[in-house]
Image (tube, rainbow, N blue to C red; front, side, top):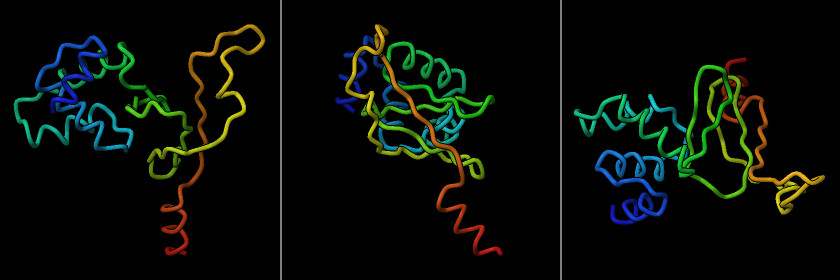
Length: 139
């Protein structure tokens, strides 16, 4: 827990028990959860945790750059703590999001045509291997 406290302080975030627990959850669950998913899983351990606290915490984490907000649909935000360069694969069938290691010719550039690059994102969409196998088994 001390590492999470230090991480929060490094990002200029006051460490509270709830924030430490949410950060621990994100570090251990690389499933790109929504705030509702985080609340649902943590509420089992901490019944006093509120949905508002989770949403407010995710806003703070995002604002301070601790987490990345991912949007694959118009109705939900997903969060991740992985700051290493990678792309994402979004399954249109089950809604899961997978990290994809992929070479990108622009990832080493800092400027393109005079524009300063601060972030690169890439998303692949389709049907994941689990859903494809499930579909084959049902046919």
